[in-house]
Length: 89
Image (cartoon, rainbow, N blue to C red; front, top):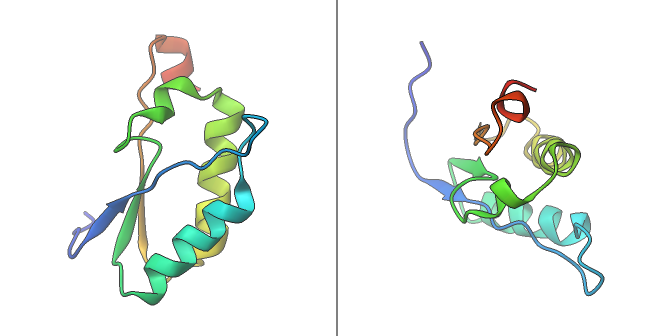
């Protein structure tokens, strides 16, 4: 069993002016919060946009956060979706 402790930030998913994921901004956001002492992150859930992203976009966001965190903090990802098949994927 994993014990969750400390402060977990709901990560906002940034987009650019063309409505594409802004992964550079996401990395800066995560890095800033890590440097400030954040214990973990809640990805694609706390701010609600996860349900509006495609599965590919959600996967990209998670992979980007995991790459930036590199084991220095916990990561929780919201996997719920409007369609059961998407949740299972």
